[in-house]
Amino acid sequence: MVKSCIENASIQNSSPRSKNIISVEAILNPASSFVMIQAEGTELKISDITIYGVDSKEIKLKMKKESDHLIKIDTRSLINGIYFVNISNSNINKVIKLRIIN
Image (cartoon, rainbow, N blue to C red):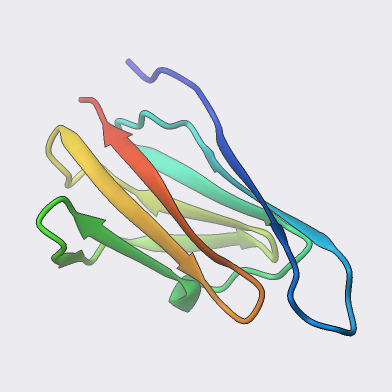
């Protein structure tokens, strides 16, 4: 069963050329099979996203770029627990807590 909630963050773009507000969301969190990372106001790349366990070790998961602003992360290989999704590029530096419930 997938419970749906969204964790949001608004980040002021630090670039002096742009005054955009960047919004980051984790959609379908808690997750059981996948989670969507969405960023409005900036383009996301798979290389912008790193996932860590509570022990701070990096976890490699399959990711698919759905659009310029949306990346799908396959979480089926994760056991129940808390993980951290770090989204970082020139416009964003945000960590989202991800809960896995199978």
